[in-house]
Image (cartoon, rainbow, N blue to C red; front, side, top):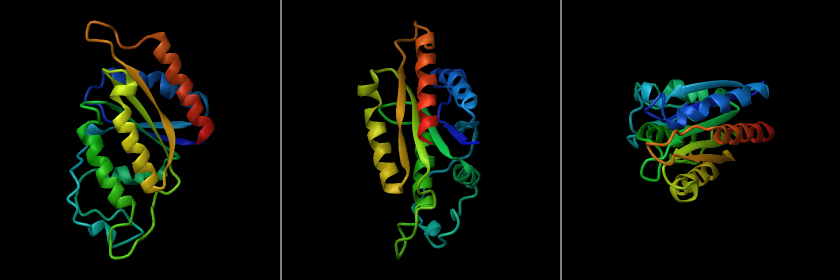
Amino acid sequence: MKRVLILMGSPRKAGNTAALLPAFREALEQGGAETETVWLYDREIRPCRACRICQRDWTVFGCPQGDDVQDLFDRVLAADLIVLATPIYSWYCTAPMKALLDRLVYGMNKFYGETRGPSLWEGKAVALLLSCGYRPEKGCDLFETGMRRYCAHSRLRYLGSHAERHLGYDVPFMDDGKAERVRAFAGTLLERI
């Protein structure tokens, strides 16, 4: 059974990105995957301090900060697919998602010490599930470009992105078309894991 870890970057548990999750998870689970969603706003995720202590031992995460990122590191390593689910604010992911990505790029990639070490998560599959207020090609493109580079640098397998647009506060976000598209994206991911 494939394990899918959804890292949810939205602060709103009834928001637009969260509205995409039921159909997405249902399609993954119907396809035989086990899913877990972690709400990043419920976790303590401190920003990276660039102390490079994590580079001393190539077998562990190694960050000296005593927050929730060690637990997230363990969950990421146990997953077959990591889905970064986030609304796009100012053309990028939310603050806890960015803080976690910064911490993982150092703790997982032992590239920054005196000698170059391994990527502890090399080969892991990563996908994006996004919501935004602009057309996705104008609202989500910078984050997607950044994540393509992040994945290449970390030796991760980038499987793709799916974004849905919110047309305004007076328009309901979720509809049957969005549910079908997100189900189809989940199916594509299952084929590519």
